[in-house]
Length: 342
Ligand SMILES: NC(=O)c1ccc[n+]([C@@H]2O[C@H](COP(=O)([O-])OP(=O)(O)OC[C@H]3O[C@@H](n4cnc5c(N)ncnc54)[C@H](OP(=O)(O)O)[C@@H]3O)[C@@H](O)[C@H]2O)c1
Picture 1 (cartoon, rainbow, N blue to C red):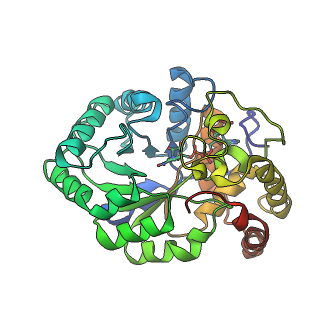
Picture 2 (cartoon, rainbow, N blue to C red):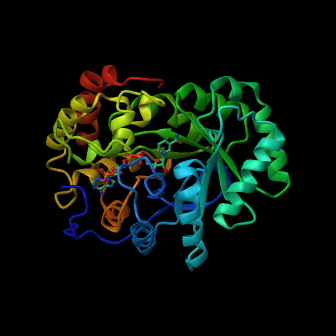
């Protein structure tokens, strides 16, 4: 199950589009997470594999890529930039800023400089969407960053802006106090609080939801056993307990060994659902079954993962029974194990 073995389920190739909040962009409901093709996920993904992964997703109808200026120190943006220049389809690229230096100050000059640098790496004159990259809560609250973004938008360097947040409260703050068109949040079977506490408000305010870490860093593919060892340059090793950055970004904040057992329980509960689909696909389908989600952005390292993920758009929604079983599992056994800011 999971990591593309070449034996993909014979699912209908279909890619539905959804509107990304007030931007009006029609984005594929399955996008492409491009952190992996930058760095931090073990052995470096070759440019060839990265291009194949992107091409396989485009072939399946994907038109939305999520990257950041810091992924591999710009490597991810450069690879994405080279790819979109060659691609005949219109692809929306969402990048991020705000974590390049400790001193990032959110003033106009800083925001403009970051936007120019991303434009250069991506080879574009204007960014489709730039997202604040989990910047400190006090910087969000100070509000200056939104004034800077507005000015840079007026200058034409960015078309739209959104915010990638760590907590539900940060998301609610951005909805109430900014013109952000989208929020990027950790949303998966291991992180269900978002359903009641954020999604309805986002929908009501036409703020698009970009669902990140949808596979809990791969746990929800069911391919890992307890004791699995990740490479030392893989954040699933060096940040497994939040040693370097928010623990939620690694395994969605669930301790790895617990996550392996819980993924097994999820697999059992979904056994009868979409018999041709892998657990990774069912987990992504679960995310898409929430209509407030504009796009889910699983990270992929190769063509078989990215096409398997893109094909989720062609899978039928999970049953109500499956959703309520997973909710019960979450309430009883998962919520209390999620560590970190939430
Ligand atoms: N702060 C932020 O704004 C932030 C933080 C985190 C992520 N993101 C964005 O969100 C994207 C997605 O999150 P994520 O990459 O952290 O986590 P994720 O999507 O939950 O997990 C990605 C990992 O799952 C495995 N995988 C992917 N497709 C698979 C398939 N079909 N079958 C089996 N395994 C599969 C791969 O593991 P292997 O590597 O073991 O093959 C892959 O590296 C990132 O790429 C990035 O663009 C943003």
